[in-house]
Amino acid sequence: MSKKNQTNDFVLILILLLLQLIFLYAVKYLNQQLPFTDFSLLNIGNILNFLVYIGIITRIYFFIKKEKSLLNKKTIFAFLIISWMLLLLAFASTRFKIVSSDVYILNQPGDKVLTGLLFMLFLITLLYFLIFLWSTTFSKQKSKVMKNILTTVLMIFVSLVVIIIYIDNIGYTSGRWAISKNEKNIAVVLGAAVWTGNVPSPTLSSRVDKALELLGQGLIGKIVLTGGKAPGELPESEVAYAYARAKGVDTSKVRIESLTSSTSDQIRWVKNNLSNDDSVAEIILISDAYHLPRAIEISKFYNLNTKVAESVHKLNFKDLLYNKIRESIALFIFWNFAL
Picture 1 (cartoon, one colour):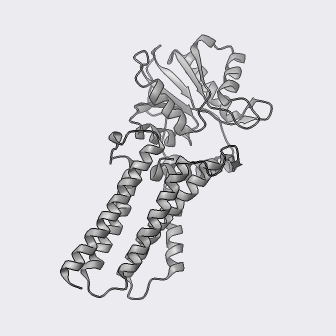
Picture 2: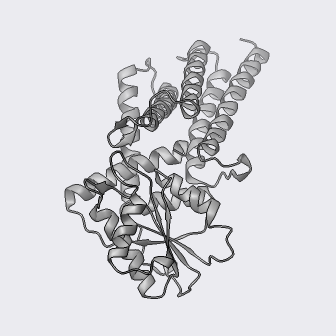
Picture 3: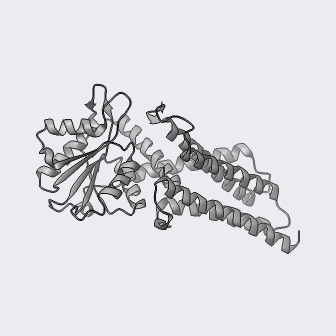
């Protein structure tokens, strides 16, 4: 292969990979209804995306430069075709309703579950190819498919363990989360499950209790209760409002938001309705300790300067572990796709 052909091949592959990375970034901001002008490479998820593509591009560069290799151009272009198809299909699922949002899978709207699975397939393809490429560097034998699949799964597993450790080691009672007394401060209670009969779950009631505690201490002047309607029940915010009213709260200091259905939706609502309000001094997000790291990361993605306060709800070991695992998966997906 001539040097000119080598250069042309690499330039074409580089352009296709960089376009894919840029498109992925654009999709992430579209997923959160943010203009691409808000893009920042310093967000953890954007950094992770960048590093994966740099790893792929670097290895392909050295492959193109070598006359002899266990790799071939057909393999590289096959990967590019498959990855582009998966990314476009995942993006299409965010624009068109393939599965009804009224269908729930694992307590999540079916359309969001499908979108999440498609994006994960795209990510798995990327990680698999990254591992496949670099495995040819350290081995003189042909790369084995099953070994690469297992390594990809292990990489994702290790990532989730690291995120669980991250979630478990951030404290929300430290000085940097200190709240000064100010009537202009507003607490935003992030939504949680409603039990049968429109009864607030212990998770939801404990979040409201924390907001009432801050209000009673004069640390905040108003409360916003967020959360939309789950199948067969009242909106989370309305159930939370009824609970707060039964506790004797001054209802003139409580506001309800009942259209959002996820943490991202709720923080987007905060961005659009509170962040530019001159009558608001500080915004305090209230949730459980295991949930707040994701809320903080989403806030950073929105360039929101929020504070947080954790509820005092205590879970047994099994439930706490389950919620931490679920949150680690959710945070992993948000970092990579802003879902």
